[in-house]
Length: 250
Image 1 (tube, rainbow, N blue to C red):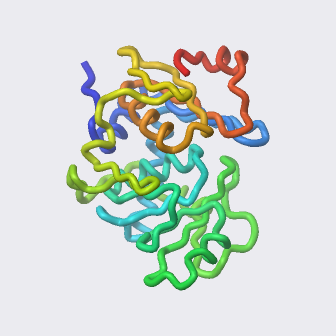
Image 2: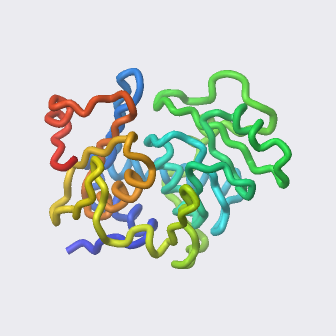
């Protein structure tokens, strides 16, 4: 019997070892984009990003990473990678104390961060799945995540683990510790708070429900062995989509 993961490291181990080739995340985005990740491939993306954080950006436990991205499959990867490293992920805010800022709008982010000292490392993240590098001009001293991340290793080994009481996530001034990140409990799906069934589910989540609903739900769904279908704003949760994706909840 598999043990339910209770830490990000345990969750990533579960993704790559339990039914590793089964779908764990499917994304429906703009312009009819659909991307699907097995547990192994999702873990590979997280590992590459975590290695990028450590090797290129000197991230370590306690590093504050501002995820200045829309709710998206890439932002979920950045959250998981930050937690693999042991850092604090910040969403919905651009804090003065961030060490690293991952952004889909680097010029705007640089302008907002003008005068902040010490200046955080600014990382441009291209959102389309097939975009292998940032297209267009980057602001000075801005790194190109999409162009660099694929060169990093598919497996991540953390040198140190965060303490259970360390802050894993800061969202809208609400903090979540590492101990609470994967705590068992109900999830909010389509605006309704409910328990997850005992059997793994294929769950429909929608960006419109916001970070504070989608992120905890996704973590608990994955920890329970299930998979997530995440719809961007503007993508209809049609009966055809539900049938095609074999949705069992949401």
